[in-house]
Each structure stands twice: as C-alpha cells, then as structure tokens.
Amino acid sequence: MAISINVIAYGAVFVAGVILFSIGTPDERAPRMALAAPAPATESRQAAPAPSVVAGGGVTLHSVSIDLPDSGRMFPGPGSDAINNNCLACHSAGMVLNQPALSKSAWQAEVTKMVQFYKAPVSEGDVPAIVDYLARMKAAD
Amino acid sequence: MQGIGRPLTRRFLLGQAGVAGLACATTPAWAQATIDLALPGGPDTRPITTAFPEKAAMILQRSRPPLLETPFEVFDKGVFTPNNEFFVRWHWAVIPTKVDVAAYKVAVRGHVNQALSLSMADLLAMPRVELAAVNQCSGNSRGLFQPRVSGGQWANGAMGNAQWTGVRLRDVLDRAGVKAGAVAVRFNGLDEPVVDGAPDFMKSLDVDHARDGEVMLAYQMNGEQLPLLNGFPLRLIVPGWYSTYWVKMLNDIEVLDAPDENYWMKTAYRIPDTPHASVKPSESGFKTVPINRMVPRSFFTNVTDETTVKSAAAVPVRGIAFGGDCGVSQVELSVDGGLSWQKTALGRDEGTYSFRQWSTQITAPGSGTLTLQVRCTNTKGEIQRAEPNWNSGGFMRNAIESVRLAVAESHG
Image 1 (cartoon, rainbow over the protein chains, first blue to last red):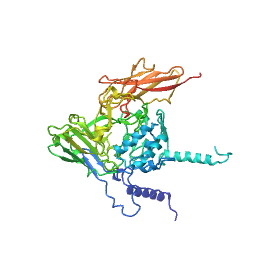
Image 2: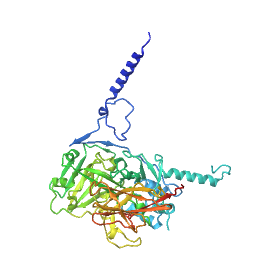
Image 3: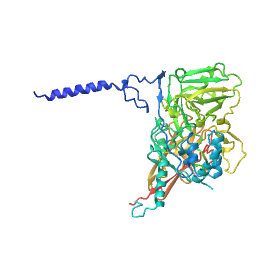
Image 4: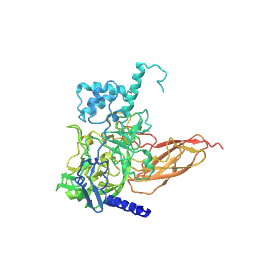
C-alpha cells in the first residue's frame, strides 16, 4: 500500500515536534556556563548539580568555573636552562621575552627584585646564568 | 623556497632549526594571529588570543598570570567597553578558577565595632548604586616610554570603561561601625602568590576616601556579572583612581588604625612626588608617594597611522577622552602640529568618571600627509601636554596623542 504525501508530511511535523519538545524552550535549558569542563562521557547526567546562584533585587549571580590556558612556552636558545628551571613557576616566559632591551645592570636589578621582594626561589648559583641569558637576549648598552 | 638548489650545510640546518625553535617559543600553540603594537625599539609583535574564558579576541601580553590588552579598535564602538573585551591584569598566578556565589563571603574587620561576614545575598539586599567609571592600569602605555622601562609592555589598551553596579563601601563600613582613630582601609582578594612568603596583593585607601560615598563594591559590570578574570564576583571600584586599587575577587576589608606598610603600598606602585610624576632617567633621591588619581587623556579611535584619506575630502574624526579624577571640560584637535587648536563636539555625558566620546570633521589637504593631535582639558583645568612624562615604573603616561594619515592624491 502506498503511503500518501500527507502521511509523510504529518509524520515529519510530528517528529519535529517531538524533537523540539525534548529540547525544551530556551528558558528551560541549563544556563550556558562559560568554558565549564566538558560533561563526563559516562552515565549520570542527573548527578551534575545545578550551578548555585544568588539572587536579590532583580540581580542573579551564577557560580562560575573556568579553565585558564597555559602557554607551555619556554625560554629558547643556549644558556636557557637556569631561567627555564627557576622562573616559570611564577610567570610564563612571554612576559620576559616581551621586555625591551635593557642593560645588564638593569637585568641584574630585575632578578634581584624577583628574589628579594617576590621571594622567587632561585638558587644563588643560578643568578649569574639567568642575568647573562637576559643580558644576551635583551641587550642594551 | 630558500633551501632549494642549495647545498644543505650543517650551518644552514642549525640556522633553520633556530628560527623554527624561536617561532614556536614566541607564540603559544593556541594563539594564532598577531598584532604589531609599534612600541619604540620593540619587541612589538603580540599574539591575538581567544583562549581565555569569557573573553573575545585579546592581545596576549602574558599567559600566566594573565595580562590581556584590549585591541584599540574596540574603543571606537562606544564609550562602554564590552565585558568580554575588557583588559585583564593579575599580579599572582594563584587565581581561583571556581567561584561558588552561594558560599562567597566578604569579611569586614579590624578597627570596627562589629566584625562582619557578608554574603553576596547580603550585598544584593543593600541599597544599590550605579556609576560609570574608567578602569585604567597604572602602567597603561608603558611600552611607549622612552627610554623604555621594565614591566608589562602595554600599548594604550590597558583601560576600559563600564557601568558598575553594587553597593557603597561607606554603607558596608557603616554597618560594621568604623571606630574613632581609623586611618586606612585595606582590601584583599582571593588571588595568592605562588611562593610562600611573597607579599599577598593588597591595597589601601585613606579612611576618608574609603567613606566618600563614591568608592563601591561592584557585583555587576555593564549590567552583567563580572567575568572571572575581571574580579568576579566582587570588585572594588575607586572612581578616578588607577586600577591597582580596584581589588578583584574582593573578600577582605580591614580597617586599620595605622598607615598601611604592606609591600604594595610602601614599595610597589610608587610615583615620584613631582609634577606629572616625571623625573629625568638619571635622577635619583626624589620623594615618592603611592600612585593615586588619574590624569586626563584623549585618543583617536577611527583613524590610525594606517589610515589613508582622499585628497581634499571631508574626514570625520572621533575618539574618546576622560578627565582622570574629574570630568571632561573640552577636547581639542590640532592639524598644525599644536600651533592652534579647534574644539570638538562632545558626546553624551555618562558621568564624571566615564569615557566621553568626541567628534569633529576636517578637510584633508591636496596631497602629502595629515598629522592630527588631540588633547583633553578636564573640569579642573588640567590639560594634556605634548611632552611625555617619564618615571622608572612607566606610570601615568598622558602625553598628547597624534596620528599621521596618508593622503591619496586624486588622479582625475
């Protein structure tokens, strides 16, 4: 028996309706969390707790969870072992590589500041190698 | 290709490896396009990144802790800087990446009658205020200093303007009851140093400033909750003062009965106590004070050094200005190297501490180039100068900005 065009059309509308109903209206959908960790692939969709919110006087604040990217960037070239081993715990390499050319004494002062004020755990024996590297990479008279 | 038809020597291979290695190292894998910031003497190439949560395309100054600069064309869109394009600056790499607003608490303690622990719900229930204010890094434009100085090598995009919503700091302090003899209020956020013993980032204001009714705690920016990287869920707003005071992820307010001697007040963020915070590079022995109020600035937003205009054509020119710690009185344009100045039209006034748009129209010359300068006078009568200031911190730059447009000759 042939299926009429009408049956196909009504069927298509019905299927679309089921899909739209299952998606829900925009308001019913979970709020979009910025860069939330991807949902675990396995089971328990119901286990994910609703993100906590605080509301008052027409303002609603949603809890936030993000992931920050890391650069993975290293100081390049010869003589970079000391700076790579001592400096990347607190900041990425880009900050340093973006600096202008400075004199060797200015670089010495920078490294001293990092150790003295910012408590950079740099072994004293590595300081000359770090200053030499910086003065070579970013040299000014 | 360079190597084709040429014997492969050991030296050549090492050279190529070096170039490739450097290319890898200069840009994180997740950053694609680059921008040229035209900093004197360089290096001035920076990646453009979209890898940071709640942020659109930003200029990557540092990945960790993040320093993200607003691409300057954003400022042509209007006087309010979109949250996802607002600049980002953190001092320490330990930044909470999860914030539960239902559990978040702000302590108010120290020299007060009644120590408090306020929830976000408590703050939402308090009288609400709104204020437009520019948030500008103390070192905005540091990369343009000559001679160059160390620090974040920003061009002009370490600033933004937002409509801030929250509560008055004064109301919060009054709830705790500031005791007689209080001299300062110190602010701390949830960020922490990576290393034990390093100075936690804290800033303080004189108690009278803290209680002036304008300093506020903001839980919204431009009508939405703050991006985490801009200090969600709560940030101190200090209208007219540099961003260093606008403590992010604020969770501790301590009333002090003695001046704050912490590192970030006593040693860092100090400026010469001289006119325009300016000294000669060779100078030493001058008195310093903590950086404080902002100074007037104005910028072009619809023309750059890359702009070409038609010969003898009408050229609409516009930009933004702000007065610093007061409003904008006027913004003027010069087409003759600063010999004469003409007034521009000011856009809608969104408040004393907001960006203000300015606009005008000029006529391009028949050929050559067209150099434009813009200067702002604030409501205190303070006016931008042609001569840049200089200090070793790279703070408070506000020299007159100029652009040089090319004029395309018409061949009729």
